[in-house]
Amino acid sequence: MTEKELISASDAVLTAAAQKGDKAAQSVLLDRYESLVKVIARSFSVAGIDKDDVAQTARIALLNAIMTYDPEKGAEFKTYATVCIKNRALDTVKSARRTLDNELSRDGTESEPEDDKDATVFPSPEEIYLQKEAETALYDALRTLLGQRDFDVLMLYIAGMSYKEISEKIGITAKKVDNTLYSAKKKVSSLIRTLKG
View 1 (spheres, rainbow, N blue to C red):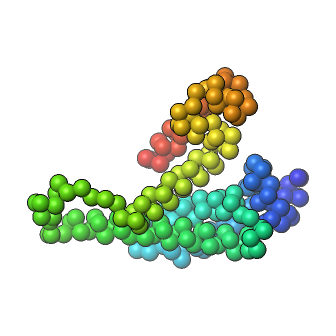
View 2: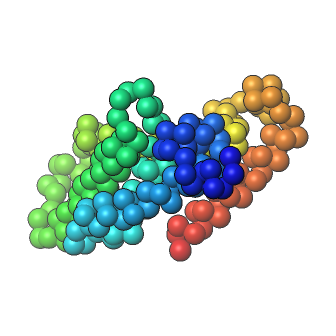
View 3: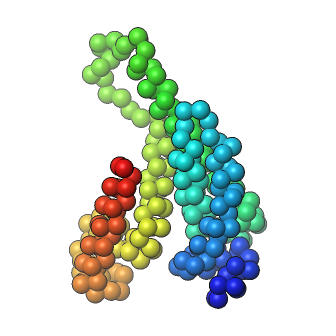
């Protein structure tokens, strides 16, 4: 599609193209819904929580919505994206609030009884859910950073497959697997350095 066709295309056409790897279609949708991301992020920003963190999480949710949207389920993309963004923003705020509450309680005068310090602590169902959400957000961010094929190569490598096995599964040469992994590691390292500031 030309740039003019992309800009005038419907959300359904753009999501279908983005899901097939069309980065230009994905970019148009991200631009089209940036104002929605900002509005939702602002509405979920509360005292003590960085609104930029909420906005970034909302953008990741929008990207995930683009890649998972199914028009056959009956909802318009805007409706689906709004729900995805609000849910992810709410989870981010809840998680940040919990962290703040934990920090405040540690600064308080109450201390744990001596007997409880060695007790094994199992995560609550809510903590497990939040951890899975964080993993999903990480994978979504990596997929966006690397592109689908490079992401697949990295995931197969992490799963313990050899270069030869990956090359056979993906349909590229072992040398291309090596180059892809080298590039992916550089991009991820750069992202981590950026995040650490």
